[in-house]
Image (cartoon, rainbow, N blue to C red; front, side, top):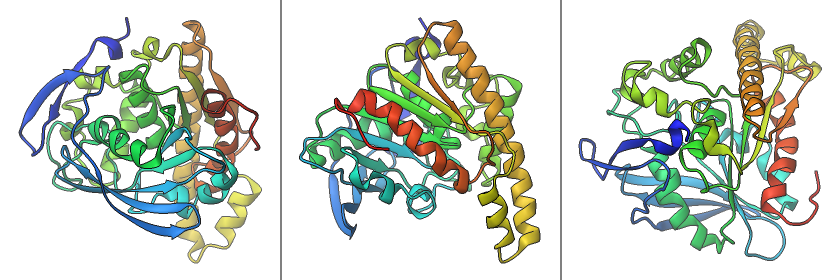
Length: 332
């Protein structure tokens, strides 16, 4: 049995400082409800969901799928910026991509640097984060009845969201039919994974010790998807990454930047991050293969850690996820 199957974790039941213990494998359902909705565009709503664990209302964006319902639900996680509107919508073309897909897409927002996890303590910069509880124990129970879902769900994400999606999947086996990680790292204990996790939180001003305690301790182990990989058996799994080599669209975007020097410096970080994500993905894919867990792996020949390249990974990821969510062929 994998670490993720046996582990228990401490969760806040309301305000910071109040704790309750429950198994990481079977989400409890906290009372939550949709408290408001605003139409943004065709098939696109901004929905507010009351969160007991966060102690506030949390906004998510919903893209209503094509065709007659009920439909499956895809929870799509953002990267490290996790702005108030998901970068999948503002930079990743998700609204256009899913316009003709028979799936309702729920996009998280506002989880900057959070790892989509339950933090041990409030952070002076990043605040109070109980994203695992919200995404598994509160949001589905509120949004899926609102959408009249058919009960089939998947989770996917990019960069920080890729790691978050895989953690949620291995810590809650059977909750999702499928999971996709795009340009992510999946260990929290090896040197690369520990460094990526620490840098992700620190890059947005957070203290990683507030996340899971000192690196290498118990909560770091229970969030390691390599250690918890056995819990992924039976799910449809998709992994993808590029190489760190710039593409023509990458170079064009840099050339058109208002401040090319700053853009080039940022691109240097993207090159390093994507090269690291490729290494993480190759290692995790090999581990799953060694365990005999089927996985679809998609590698881009070029691409840096940016939205011009993340968007190219979305169609292959959807093709894999759709095999678990949609019983008929789907369009690219």
